[in-house]
Length: 386
Image (spheres, rainbow, N blue to C red):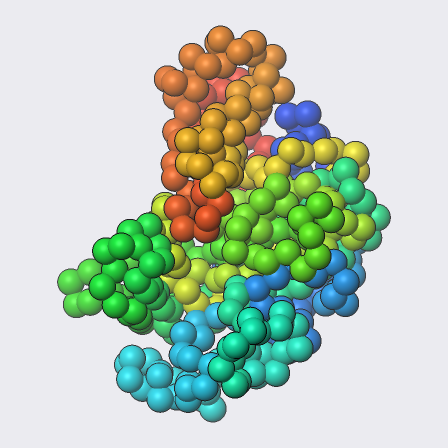
């Protein structure tokens, strides 16, 4: 692909507001390849930086930044072995050609899993040594001057796996077909970054499209303390949106002072729907730029990439999720083009694509995608050029 250098950003960028301030563009050029993107702050994967399965409004921030800063984050994941199992035995049994001792990333992950103080207490009656399950997250990132009612733009400059494998698993009672899964299972995929492939078997390979399933600001107080990360919400969180890869932008409402951004649940690839309960889970290094929009209030998460505007509908009822995604899309057409309901409704039927984001997180997801090619008189000012 054609790529241009990304200049280091050490102060807040000037934002040219478009679409009522909910989507924004600057002249910042496209990103470099993995690990070459300049950054202002680095957040390693450590026990102190990791948090498992919940969002905390009181956890000490892993870094405090100003609007416009670029942050590189080493995430965790890929730890499909049991709480009391030997990771090296699991790796060998599944044909993964590394050990904890030979992989810096894996040693950091194991240390965080074993030593992080940031876990909720186990359920009553749990066996000795059991750890509370939940997404492997890193955060929060504190954004100076962010307050409830603002919005946070997260530019996804790069996402790259930091392990040579990923894994998918399921069990009876889980996933989209809970009654048909006969037994617990794990499927390991070896990742070939040079060929951009996850190897299923000798005949099948899955193209890599790494992204983090969880990207969110800290939830509002109305969600309760230490809100678990399983369900997505108005704050974003576990969207499991496979379009949030390198070159995309996520827009999130702010509900807590400092925004308190968390990320994790790393994927190497996923199909829309994420039907088995997870996709190809791995550990990623991501590089994000954070831009604060003062006084720009959102109802919920929105996104865009070089080709599309993206609108999410979230609800335990998939029909209601579809309704919310459609209404968000119609509202956008009114914001952008001044369309009344009927012409917007007609255009939605003729040209907007709606996809099932995921069907496994209890709060289910639909996302509408409006192609930017529809707007023939618009100038392309989006920051990323694929």
